Length: 172
Image (cartoon, rainbow, N blue to C red; front, side):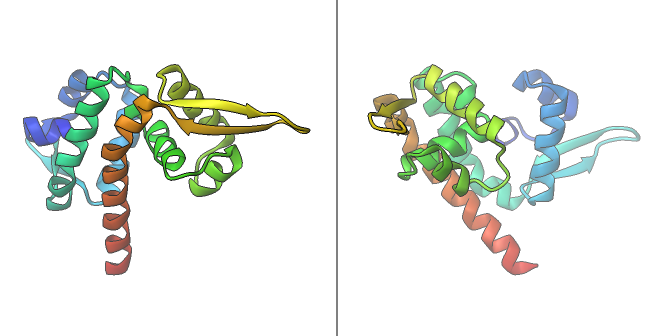
């Protein structure tokens, strides 16, 4: 959404080149954004389609830009801007410190996706995994100082997306 906001309507291939994402990931992401009413497909010719932000998408674009810029500033890599690591970071920042508590807050996430997101966040030094002594040992997650720097922009975007989703559900 940040790219569409800054560059305007783009064809799929142009988005693919500018984002460096895989075809499958971009296809899935665009389908989700279109379904949520944040991006629209427009015919630009006989065989070509372009993607553009809707008014709802334009309202969220500045928050997307903030998240992207904050992640770049921290050199957090691409993992922080992926779907699951982003929402996992916010869930941990909101106080969900245990694996199952994070999983319960994120409907649709698989155990594999959660484990991968946590590992990505750990490798980018955004989340730390702590093992508490006892039997059985308990694992907790918390934001690192870097994660706490990134959290406010991610929280703002997730909160705005939740309100757009709730408004969309109320309208249907």
